[in-house]
Length: 318
Image 1 (cartoon, rainbow, N blue to C red):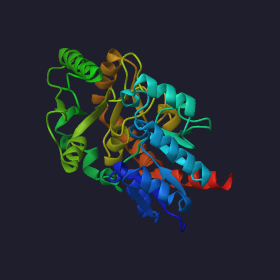
Image 2: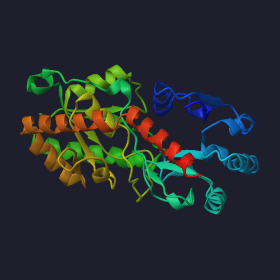
Image 3: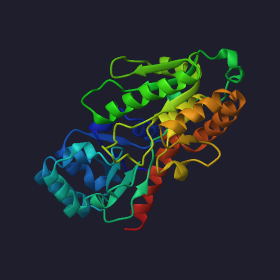
């Protein structure tokens, strides 16, 4: 493909763009609206940052006009649904009126009609290449290898976010229930709001934990959880760890039923933990199934291929 893909400079370091470059796509990073407008005639699309760009509505309208004149699609990946970065009400109104996105990717299709008049595309997060183990070591099948029974890595202590408060309470109550059953069960809770971890450190914790827990997502709203799956849901199995996650609507759209373990509430989570810790071999059977599924279908390399195919299909149908 000779024509480049224009990408906002805000996406310079995201895994999807890196993998597009690995596929041989010529990426041109644009610092401002003017850069995009000047290059629109000779590109396959513009991968924009909608929530930032709509803050300058007049310039954004000029940009959209130029893109449409050149048959260059405005492409947007919404990883924040349904939070939408706390976008202000008047901008929500503008979004709904404009429906500016030509190719709309989203990890959750909540409120998709705000953004596009075309069919939205379910486009979940994926496993970063740094987390992917092509082969799983035999030591993961040895119970004596593990240091922790249950681990959670994520933001807990951010008191300004209601979803963090909810997560903190859930983890506290879960510990209380599990400890009342067996006080020797080892919890390892790492608050990334207070403690930075390298990828290597994260991978070691995942591998050393019999159960790796996911609960909550930063894009959850009060009383409205996102349908989408956080990146850790892909990263944990990519490493080879066993994942136990809260239920979200897209789980069954993403993974086969016999690969992913999930729970709906606190008590079900506690019951599953107790059952799984007494059935270690079962956790490894599930972990290896989900690992194989993620490595084959849910890396950012596979996401990049899907992304590019959607742009090519759009151009063919003009």
